[in-house]
Length: 344
Ligand code: TYM
Image (cartoon, rainbow, N blue to C red):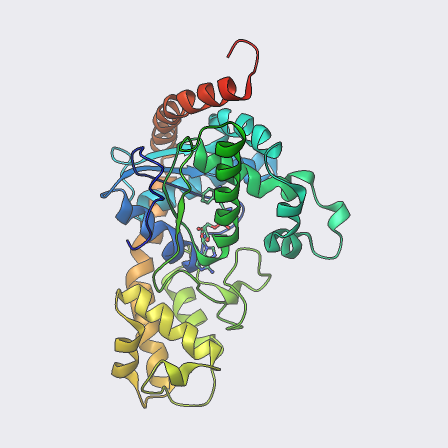
């Protein structure tokens, strides 16, 4: 890990991250987030939650939401998170997230939120019809992180701006309440080849849960045939693969597929290229399909097994919620006292 925690903060190092239960999980979520969570749990105290408060910033069917939370939890476990090592919990089971989120709404500035590109993308042409929650969503994200005084936040590249805002909120709180090292300024862990996986249909667009084309992504619950077929249909160009990464520039689809191969195989993209240099996609795609099936197949199978027994998943979430509430309580008590609330 190259990033350094600023020297003022002397608390323990902690990992925190989360995923929204708002659609099928895909390869980007897996490589950009879940794989990193599973690795980091062996290095630091780790908190991983299911962001259901975030999910309801856009409409979620109440009859489905709790099961969507279970599905994300199943993905966490299938990716290798160990509930005895990491604290795994539903965000809505820890009310302190919402309470600290409100206090941070009063710390963050409107100008800071006006710059958030994800709100612009998600609200589209009709921003006046978006929920207020969608607008203040990055402030709640800062509360998620700082409630546990997390120092390291493993996320995909698309979350970088939200992490910068988290640091701004932490710094302003520390300054306004005269507590220079109260909150850490957390680092976004966005390094690594899987941090920005692009759509299989358009190498310039992010692979996303909300893309209307299912062929644009490999879902963790896709079966082997679906995975192989989506790789076969992935958009490419007519040129053979080049020798160097430099020559991939301007070929976004080719660059993406090489990046996916490298991330799935835990190798550097340059090394993968040198193996396939001079070959066309007719030769490369079947190899990529085999690798994707070998890596994702067992994850999907394990998710299906876990989801057949919701009781086991619920027990993991209940235990995690209890641990998370206990970890959050001291921070919230200190914040209440600093702000000057009655009785704090
Ligand atoms: P969400 O649910 O959109 O995505 C979950 C994680 O997957 C990563 N990701 C990707 N990584 C690589 N390539 C892609 N194409 C790709 N698409 C998604 C995301 O970067 C993310 O790490 N706001 C967050 C959830 C959240 C959170 C937090 C995260 C709420 N509070 C506190 C960290 C800390 C989100 O919507 O992620």
